Image (cartoon, rainbow, N blue to C red; front, side):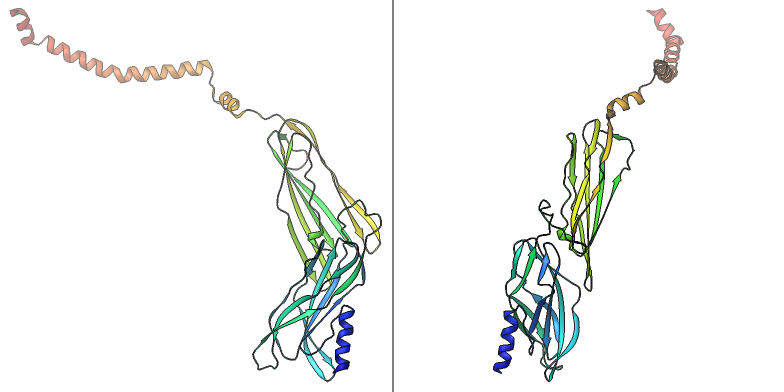
Length: 328
């Protein structure tokens, strides 16, 4: 028993918890890494009976450091001494922008498992011991600020409307920039600068970010959309964008520049002037319309007027009317 306890203490002191009945083991994939480079973290759960539910990890919060989790846990068996345990291997990756000695303090793991295949699941809580690795700043990245460490970074952009299209004041040009990187997380891909010349207003949409993990391989994708509203007429140069990153495989700084766009903006035509010009008729057309309207009015009045005059004449020249006038 004392030997077993000593074995456990040795693993804890070196950053790895030794497997025992219904316990956990954690280990880092690297003792030293470049700043921004992924450091694998594997946590293995042990149980004599089947696991139940989903394990939870109370990962610590560390300044300028993030944890990402892989896909589903890898299920297996492992023999320790005379016992065979069921295992769950959970894979994480640690990214830090700090340099020097990085300490991951102890944290709790919560899961449920059975003592036998027929018993009820019981909740478990285990502690992961302190883990330590070294982070080194890549040479030549002092001016980069945030270091993106990726084996490959592909960058492309598109414009809408396409370059060369007619642009007038008030129009909006949409710029879409897509970045795909291997060996990092989308959280490490920095936002696009929202710079623009005077007379142009920039609107930045919420970026689309996605991480894909397959076994030990990880791919990050970020799509940024910028909208440039051309407020005044004139010639404008929308800025170019340069991306720099650290290639850990070749141990060198790489960069790629997306060209800007030269835009000639024409003055916008007044809608009111356009409407007045298009609807205003020549003088002869207005005269013709007036004649037609007058004719319609005369036609509408002529017949009732003739009827009234005829009725008056008939009444005025009737025998009774003539006799009354003669008598008077």
